[in-house]
Length: 534
Image (cartoon, rainbow, N blue to C red):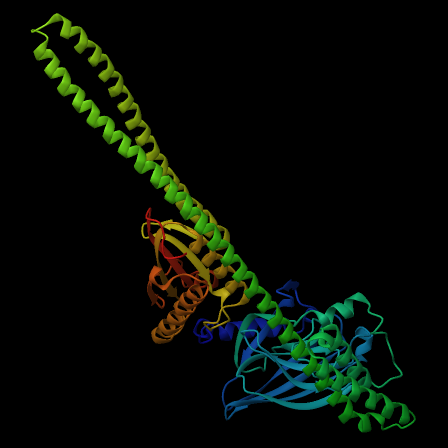
């Protein structure tokens, strides 16, 4: 989807004036919130993104954070020919190990309003720096972080400086909540836990320390198990670096001689870490799939048992109905006999006594027939209650997995857009797990049902784009249900509704998030047994 900018155009000038006054405030040093999400550390904080005008040059101030108050400088920025050039001049950098023995360097990042962070350049440790970098982004924030080594792909929580506006800054200001994602937590657990592998060392060059950090982080990420060959390459190169460092300790230009090898070690270590994380994630997905298959097999077994019990109940009910019919027939025969007996009563008193005896016997049979008929009615009512209980159990089971509502069109299961990758139709692992459980519940349900899958978006973006995205997400959910064992003949329409039928206002982020959803409508619930093998 396109980034929403129209709403801030009118307020741009006023916002620039306010932010110019506040630009001298130092930014916070760490993310406002850091928590574990699916094995990754997620940090959230507010920063300022600026939209730079094509063909115009401007500047922003770079203010030190609370952990690096002595930092300060300016970034000259010019947007032209589809790229943005950045010339950064700053002073006041201290040895990064003063922020913690884990850190060996500084990195300049550009962060888009959607939270995508890009490693622009390593900032060498010296008092005054003057570097240049480029980015394809037109709207972005600039931040500087302390890092364990320069090849990292995501920023650490240690923000030492970020951009603020001055009165001379040109461009449209946009305040965005930018979300940082840490890969597996390996980086920052070591820093905060006081790992002995990361002790302060002011005698070894920072490049060598950074190379050591890269290899150690790869080990902590599980590379020994998931990427042993790649880790071995990094360890061999690190050994070469350590040997060269031991031979050049007295050389003042040791950093220049060791720089190429050290950075190669960092790249190899980062490569081993990335491969390890990817393979570990794939192993987890494989385990999830196996668990889902086990759940489906168990659900099928339970469904088969429920079908057998339902078949037995129907057989017993049918027998009771036959008995009631026979009793009714006997009652009719009795009434005929009574009529004949009454006609014969005038012929002989002796026959009247005999007829009276027959009448008493018939009356007893009639009462028995009534009792049997009542029993049959009670059993039919019980069968109806069991059906309603099964439907209620289906509703409860679905609602425990995903938000489920009862509507006139049936049971409506809603999936929010946070279960998909941003702006894509790819299901996240959490979404696949929930859909697998939902499929297991549907497979276990003994009655008839019909499914429709509808996709919806918010009102941001073109009709054609929203319609296509909603169709793709609905089709993804449909395909996953079929792959999980739901029979295709249970599934009816699969539709993309685009931004039609919103359930909330599109004027707020919360309302738009509620409108971005996929709905699974379960209808035509019936009492007939499911004999399709599910």
